[in-house]
Image (cartoon, rainbow over all chains, first blue to last red):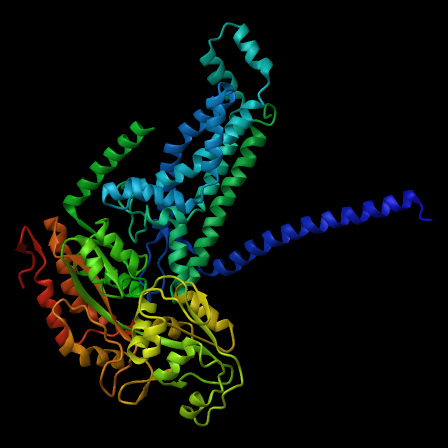
Length: 283
Length: 347
């Protein structure tokens, strides 16, 4: 006969070990990817790479500064278009959407969140690029905004639902009008969580390539005009990686490193932001 | 949100027009194959004419034709001429301006066998039809005395995506094999009877590089840059040749008598002893009647520069320059470029 207590302890030990190994495997994969990108990308990473325009193939040097600026421009447009509607939609769903319309919007948002990004790209191409007869930064930013909106909406909704009901009642009891309660009390106390959702949405779209291929297209020049094609880090990496030239491959790796660092810093900022300012009130 | 969009759009639009007064921006898109050459041209042409801001994106030959037809770009680019049907869809007359010559290399990975394996057109068709499945097939050995061919299976690697490279390669096989005509046919993507697929030139090059016993086809630059062994192909004169700048130009030169006025021509399987048989022209596509005088003039000037001064940049990037008589014919076509039915180039 096996001692039941001993048996339990053995099972417990084995299972704990198994979960530990699984966690280690996940971490190992993450670090393998990061390590490989750093190892491949660090060689071509220098000040010129971050501040100069690309050189044609066969000439060494040059950089992807235009793509870094372009990516930021695209994300900026996406935030401008996606942030207000995302947050307000989330607010509506949490505070006023306990009805058929609300459930319908929720359903549609989920479907939008699951739409493959290439489809969003084709959508923006058909609706913005074709009528304007030109590829543009605006079309690219709009496509990214469409990907951001459902992410922001759903996180905002979930965070706001966590705000205690007593807070609302208290504010109303003090004579504050409904709009004041919603914007000044509810949204404010959920601000940290909402900011996290926004940052995650930014990190998500920063790595998108597919919706930009047929909207922002790409460019070799400085450009901040909204009605012109603009370069982005992701599309530039894609272009360089499939070319036959070694120095372009090296630059693609360095570009990937820059992109990973940018997304990493965004995520880090989220952590610091939510910890320092809102650790007390954060639901 | 719609209001916000319009607001942003209008401010963006203003910024754009203000810039337009000082410089002309030209947007091109299309074939991947000449992308390195065009990116070189963009930087070189900027030194010649700083007022023109050129941009080119490599989205594939099919994409180039489509975007030109949709008029989202100022010029398109393609490795294959537009078909009659595509020209009908475009509605307005499209000029085909040859910009450079290139070649498709047949690459393989056979440990112990150096670059320069000799392959005839019949063998090539049979391999890609899946009829020859072993590397030590007597047909291959017969043309490669002294090379010990391994008793290994042949793995055919082809493109999965629509591509100008595929179009050129199967165009050649159509000319040399009647069985190919019946079973596979032409096009930018075909129903391959054998083998596995790779996406893009880089995909095929990667597959072949990793798999012993494989054979595939890529643009010459990919074979050279990746240091993959490539075959000598027997031309119509019975001579085995590797693709080179001289052999590719020879193919275009020998075809020049048959080049039609609209310059839509295939130069595969050309006649002549120094001809590499899987050569191709790559084109820049523009509408004959331009809708913007400034842009039209800028496109014309750029293309004129490209077919003359621009040709010296071809060699170092594994392309071949256009032969002189083709340049002459192209000049004639380029002079047709017009705005309001008035010619834009006065040369």
